[in-house]
Length: 285
Image (cartoon, rainbow, N blue to C red; front, side, top):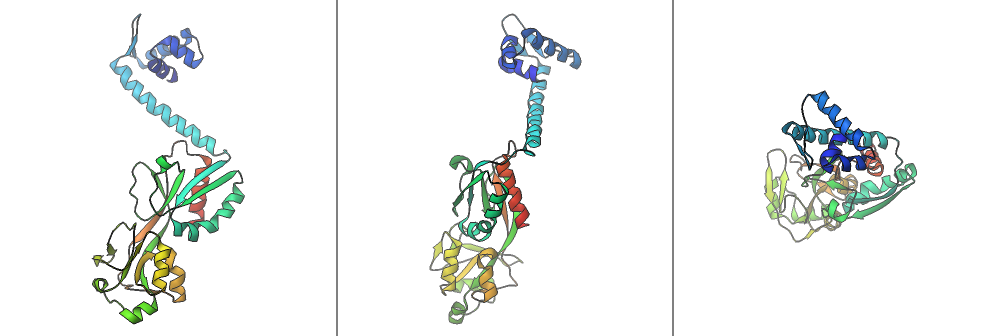
């Protein structure tokens, strides 16, 4: 099969033989045996050129797919014993990286001492291919096509505010009440200026004195009484437990969100990427 593909791509038995480091006679013999086995002619041979028959064209396309699958299987088997090494370039959101990922990194580096982590904290959506990242961690909706996404964990969006703000401005009793409140919005929110509740409440358009492209900045503003925020639980969880922030409208919860690892392809997945994603999935389960 590999010999046949080499002949087609090289457009001659002589060039295919050189490519395969074999004799022209052996290459010709293998193709002839393949045609005998299939019971059909795959190549039209003339003194000047080779061309595929109709059967040959169909068989060639299937050969490419089979050989690609075989190569992927061999790579997967090899990776089981491969030692993760080299620089692993990872992009992740600022707050999630600091709160959830940073405490896990030392153990990963102990397990795989030949890996060097190069982590970029950015709330914007980086382009993995254009910017040369091995993988990215995404919190929330997945907009990219052509990337492999592996779910690591789940979280939920929480509406909350500081007691000082609620004493001054009152506590909302329904999502529609947010129109009368100062809402501090996240610049990269998938819903834009709408906060979408579960349970039939739908989306509510919000307004407020501030927006920011980082959840922790909004959290600090909320703690200072500037307004309400709509943030993942991993950002505000400790403040809710301590009472520094109060969850609002618990009967109208915010949406659940997924946390995923994204990488360009399963094919030829390096050991450093595979082990890092597996490790995060293990620790965040």
